[in-house]
Length: 88
View 1 (cartoon, rainbow, N blue to C red):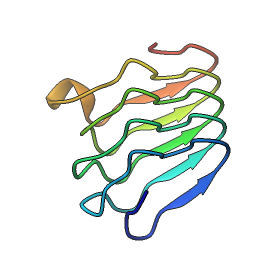
View 2: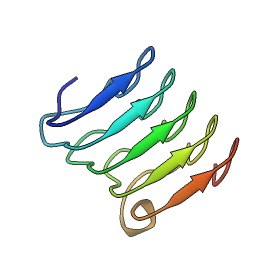
View 3: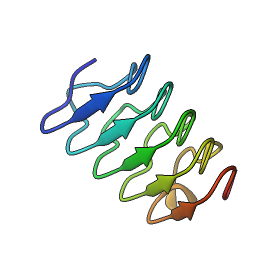
View 4: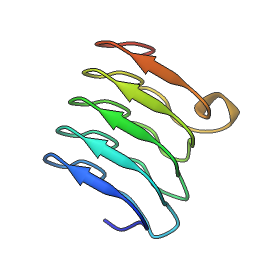
């Protein structure tokens, strides 16, 4: 795990982060688990939130499993999800 200006709290939160990623906040077990490869400016609060994000940026997810399936590309950027399973 690495990444500049990053805050992680919870088991396996942000586990795959690389040094190209910056300014992410992941709070909760498995939050932001697969985030890597330059994914930046993401906030995930809740167990499993934004778990599958890989390169998406500028996303906000609050709630258990919120934005869990978000992955890459333009569809994976600039999303907001609030509530359990929101935009799963």
